[in-house]
Image 1 (cartoon, rainbow, N blue to C red):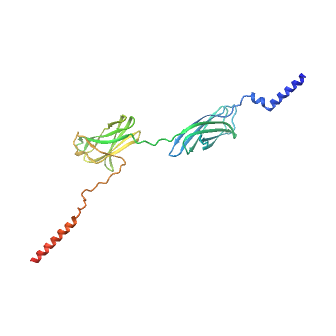
Image 2: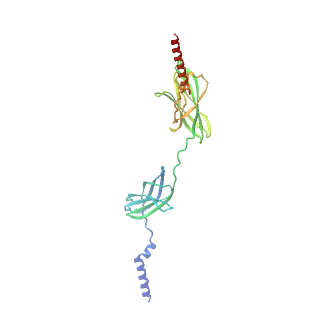
Image 3: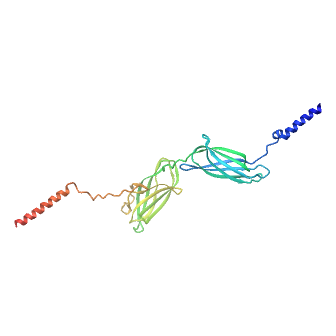
Length: 307
């Protein structure tokens, strides 16, 4: 009886082992290629988002992998619709090493998206990874916070035997935004389309919501007249620019006497001057002249007849 019982349990055990019921529970899960992390960079345009997705893949096995490939897609979590999908081949990965793969594709709609990455070995799914991203369009460039308000010109002295003149050029600056530093003030004195004299200076600090005045001393030929072009730059980019409303004859100005001039924002249309001398004749003026001429002719004819 004991032998029969032993044989029965031995048969059950042998069947369980051969069918894998016990073996699958007892053995440790063998390592396989996996996705360790996913990085997402976004760049928005007027309508679309460009995504650069970098997937990091690791092989923890003691043997080389088979042929690996990646599939990356974006999914709208609200509608469950796939917005974009991309596939890339990785190839074989040596034991105990890691690699990464970057893919770029376009998403036609912003908002919340799920980035889903799947790793395949010999076309068999081995691992998956998902991460949410919020796609927000970049705000449009705001109006420049720096403005040029006016221009003060002050001649200091005539030099080089009267050929040159030293002048201080001081544009008014209004900062309507945050505090700015290391701005460059560029001033150009233009006498004609081919003759320009340019100087620059650094504005070390322009406080927030304050008015200030930059200043640059220049030496230019005394007998010419100049239109002054002003530009405020930050790291080579022009924040604002303007020009004086008139050409200024520096030689006619009194020394050490500041004079304020208006500035015209660069790009503003130039109004054509109106010829005030070309006035239309007053109503009825032509008729009066014709009547006087007629009277004069009649008088001349009468004089001849009397003779």
